[in-house]
Image (tube, rainbow, N blue to C red):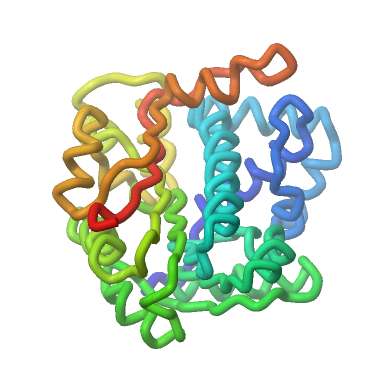
Length: 291
């Protein structure tokens, strides 16, 4: 168990908070800033400082700021659509400083849905401490577990998860730092043990982000930065084999978004930000092949 909470999770929360402050990004996470360190909140309040930090962010991980904006929008869309379609459980794997249990509390209550947050003990403890700033807590079941060491099935079973219920699993910014067997275990669990019509939405690195075998926009800087923070990239998927990769694990692709897809969908609007999405990230919504 790590004694330190994830600093990259905090940086992702800072990015979401900055997106919410910038009209060009239309960022929906208006609660993220309440979870930040004090100096981060000061930066958000001062446009000049916000711009400086944003430029530093872009130098260290070019295109990742844009990717994080696209990711928040896409994952939020999936949650809304799945709850409306009948999902009764939302499981956030590697939740970090996620605010969706609070932001979607009303929608979840109307549909009778339950949120579960799964994360390492250190990061979850820090998130729960800071979450007091968000106001009254919605019903959330917190499960402190390291998925590199404990099976997801065991963690959920002990947390009161209903294995028969339709569930949407969110796996945001996590696969990058896991082992191949840990990724396989989660995907195979969704395919074989989740309720009918359950889905999983996750982001992934291109395999080259781990191996460094082929260049992509922002890749060299991004690899160096996360390694310097003690959380190097460890897992990726060949972007040309996403369908086959998931089929081998009992899942079928419902939506797959590569950098060019994100660019067209979120950064081609005349009233929006025109920045470039990093060239080594993808996002997938997948369902059970058996459904």
